[in-house]
Image (cartoon, rainbow, N blue to C red; front, top):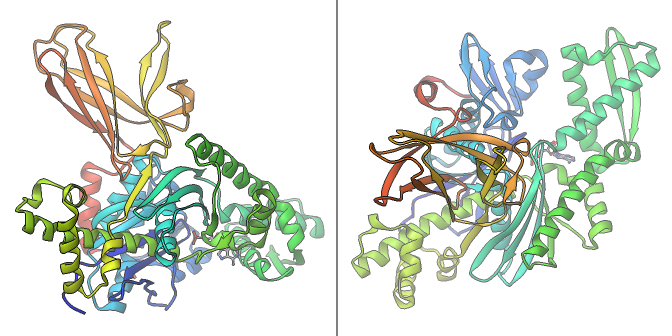
Length: 556
Ligand code: AMP
């Protein structure tokens, strides 16, 4: 192997489990086991006196110390009201997630003897602006150089393509994890991986299947003991039942029945849960995923993709046998269960490797062409260069790095994503009613620019406040009730402007799903300063303090 390119690691920051991967010297994506020699680390954080414990030990501690353990923090990411207090210290979701990131990275460093610095982190496709930004902040608090946030199903498709030759086909990625569900249609061609459309539910995952079993166990306990109390009010019993329910669920993936014992208030009840009963208890949850899949298929059809070739199942919960069975029955294809726990981190690592190779290629091309690399992105340099120059640069890079020429060429595959939400602003209609005007519609390819003209209300107005709204509606105008404010944009105007002056604001959603806003005042075509303000992502002093704490807090 010749000169190495910079290593960019891929991290799947999951609701229940997280994992980290890298691309080895032979161009193969590999999951790096944690210090317990497991491929995944539970995304559970235990505040244990002065130390932070992440992973299996934290998960086990939840039973004894329910108030000191945080699980499912990903469901709280981007929510302004989530704050966890421990020992008079307030922690935001971003900081708690940063502990999970640090744990997987530390274990990887120990395993490889190499520092984890540059990373690609994944998030669910339907994460909105704030959740994405919060995920990035979690990485930054952990001390990483976050190269990109990419969507989990896109990462899964990238990993899938790396193993299969890139002929033209359309793939559906059904991703049912611990707390989230994503369904995505991806069109693969020899030189592009393009997300056609995506849908899903923030609050639907394996945990909901567990909860159904927990409720069933409570009912059985009540039936057999004649005790009417809500035994879930006892935190110990509640934790016990959660753990037993998840264990039972996993056993039912392999076997047709499983014994479960429930102990509460000195009474012990034993039941046998049959797979059929489990499927009956959770049937409606599975149907919700089927309905999301149908909705996404009709969105895909509107964009000209009326059929698909492969249906792949990712996420730990897709192992439940009823999932594949129901999909085959409904959609007439046999889905493939594809490395459910590893595929997302692997795809992120391959994407990181692609970024690193692209940087190398762009560097070589710019040397050959005499271009200043600081002026353009690697993608732009490659896109704008003559084919012969790219070929020469690719050959040189392959020689220097020891990777094969086809591998280097494959790193130039373009990955195109879509907006997972619609984005708009609050306007008033003719009847002076407030409503939302969508500038960017969900499932539009990104990057995308869209503009709207606003007017100053009075002469000499110093600022214009724009309310930025996120929603799931694919219409130009939406009632306020269907949308969520994700922040405000404050336009700072130059002095001396008249009333009613048009100001054109442009939303730009980049390929990472980050929103940037620019504004131009029409009279003199002057650029207007825009700042986006949000309370949903850690910022200001809280961010600085979390960054500072990160230097001193040890994570185990
Ligand atoms: P992920 O977020 O992709 O790591 O998925 C974690 C979820 O997968 C959790 O809800 C697990 O309980 C669930 N899971 C993992 N293995 C199995 C299995 N063998 N059968 C059913 N569910 C599983």
